[in-house]
Image 1 (cartoon, rainbow, N blue to C red):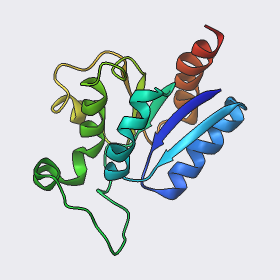
Image 2: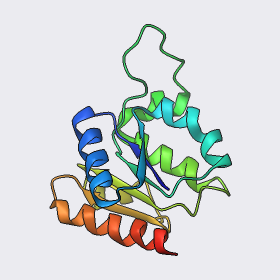
Image 3: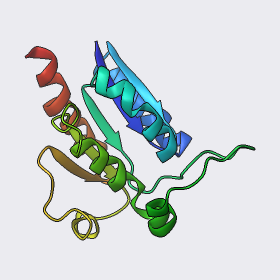
Length: 151
């Protein structure tokens, strides 16, 4: 089974990506993550059982609205939601078990905007701008996930 983590706080985008993955990879199991806090909470699980890939939005909320909002770490308070996906990718890159899992930064931001935060650009990290054709996302899925399934 192909386990793909989709880190996206917008439910319409999250549902669309999940549907696309299930259509393209019928045996895929998209794991949906709705916030940076939720991402950090699941890291230990992924270390024990690394997923096939991560699709991460860059601008993410810290948590979904609730009564019990966990404390915000200083780097999150300082940089805000604008670089949440970059922080998530950095956590993956710093982890020996997760650094080789393909990451797609799927965001409204241009690659040039991200290069300021990702210098040098990490190996195994791709970028597709939301709003570009669906075919680019499908191409990344086919290249990175279908190939892995055959290996």
